[in-house]
Image (cartoon, rainbow, N blue to C red; front, side, top):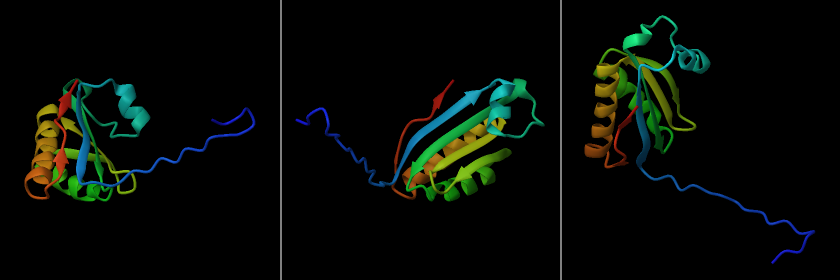
Length: 120
């Protein structure tokens, strides 16, 4: 037990597994969300959606972005190979299809552990 002058140092480490840890679809998000994220402002907000995913290893976001944009009419808002984050936008049905395609491919072809796609 440390005394009052000692500090405890905690080091957290992540071990990169092959997994999609987060997949969520926001249907009809408020315009301010698009603006704050720097996403495409030329959008019909009433029928739009934002899809966001996170995966490890983080370079997987490059593969996921390729699958997403090839699967339908979606806009690639952000893909980060350093954090594994992917954000896409488009019509709700297109965003849903794109996230499903990514999750299915990663699970069935690449052997990733995947989470379920949630929606709000």
